[in-house]
Image 1 (spheres, rainbow, N blue to C red):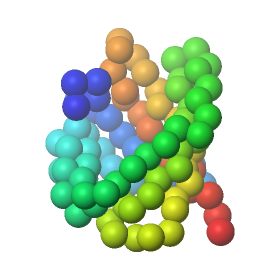
Image 2 (cartoon, rainbow, N blue to C red):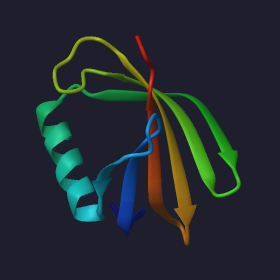
Image 3 (cartoon, helix red, strand yellow):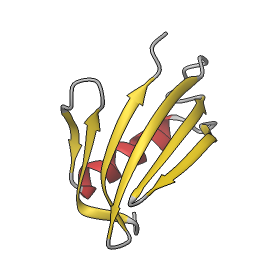
Length: 93
């Protein structure tokens, strides 16, 4: 949480909607996810750094006890060494 801006926002790439706001909500979300997913594992499949953006293609397994792997692209926007915005693309099946 030390690299998360207090006013962080998460966005759905498909429609631009805000899916989560502020560091407190982020902490609760990830604490709950980690507690429910003791075998959670994320692998960075590819990373691109473009200015103040870090773009990760991630493969995630055992999220919330779901056996099916999840593939996401996350775009992190960084200002003053803090992540202020995350845009999430989920691979359509």
